[in-house]
Image (cartoon, rainbow, N blue to C red; front, side, top):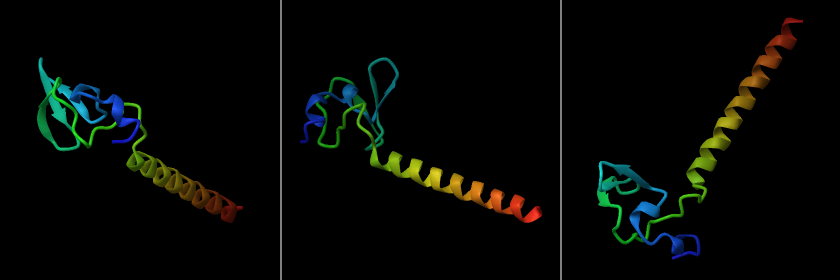
Length: 80
């Protein structure tokens, strides 16, 4: 267990926990119902920990946006 996950001792403190109903929730990582008070599993991650998949999604979004901007600039330059 890494140092960030050591503070995640129960499911409700995990980044992947989504509250649902009055007493429990859903584990987004395993896609199963869990109780908020259950001991966290080895997949638990700190709620403020950056997900690498999110970073990759942001990077690909920025790359696509930059490419679109460059294409528009080239088209406008070609018109002049």
